[in-house]
Image 1 (cartoon, protein in one colour):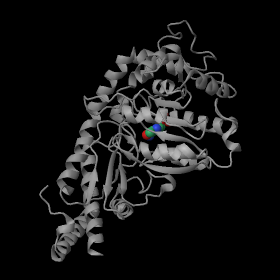
Image 2 (cartoon, rainbow, N blue to C red):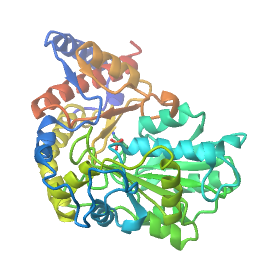
Image 3 (cartoon, rainbow, N blue to C red):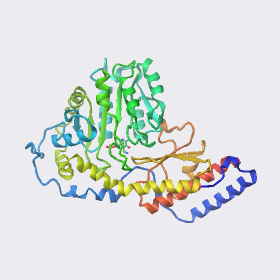
Length: 426
Ligand code: PMP
């Protein structure tokens, strides 16, 4: 902690540090590590929390008498929609409970927008000369690859602690009708941990946009994933947008992927009732109804919205110590060195590590060579291009805590070594 910043070291001291880190790195090579901090997956211990789902549902009908084994009910089981409407602070009729992946719902919305346009579009987006999206960075890699796959151009704005740089967003969307939408992960963002403030949300909901059919893809994947008892409440974007006269602007997404089972949870979409009708209208051409057996299983498992909150507290007990460990090791090894900054998220699945500009790729490469897999540098940016080569996303939930410790110790060595190499011009 009392370490000297690299920038203040004499040439001799820097050379010593470089030698020390090279030696530490050589020692790492001998450990035969095989550690993985790449993806934000729940650990087996977290998945075990939901194992009762494997024995549910016990009934074939929901509380309204609907036989869940049959076709129908495209909008999803009412009991589950009501439960998650409460958790997402929206009205039940604004919620669709769908399949197991919210990312698929996002992709479907983008497909429908491209092929058919929105409720407030003049024409399908695919008939526009150019379609662009505002992307706060660092952000979620799959959002960016999805846009890339559709040829939607990406314009970046910085992500701050209280959400995207709203001045930058407002300026971009005001004059350019090709800017049709933006991504936001409003609560415990992937990977910055940011929480969109009420004020930022209100400005995004109300800002004038040159495109009449501008859409906010409000991906609330981590709405309930608190790491402390101070539970952030997501801004109520649907009400804010409606009050500002833009009711069809936001489309909200969420899922139980990191609440129950990541491969067999339930995904949700919430929006204005017109948007919901639009979504279901298109969905209905390809589906006669969702997996309502899974919906009922989730209803029985949780009981009510409080059951979901209680369940998330059990997740927190398992993963909060892993996040604490990331912070402890980074602080002990890198604190005061001036070689890295990182956040201490209060929720979500990631730690955002910024290393000396120009060294992120080198750190990831060094880590890989000693058996520590990190998300490729640049992943949190459109086209995988981090202009500063500084950002690394750490995902500590999956490995057991002692592996997190070992991995972070190795990462710290790699960060120091890369920084010392750069400072020494080595
Ligand atoms: N959005 C964000 C921001 C995510 O981090 C993830 C998962 N890593 C997803 C969506 C994927 O959600 P789902 O499993 O519901 O498709």
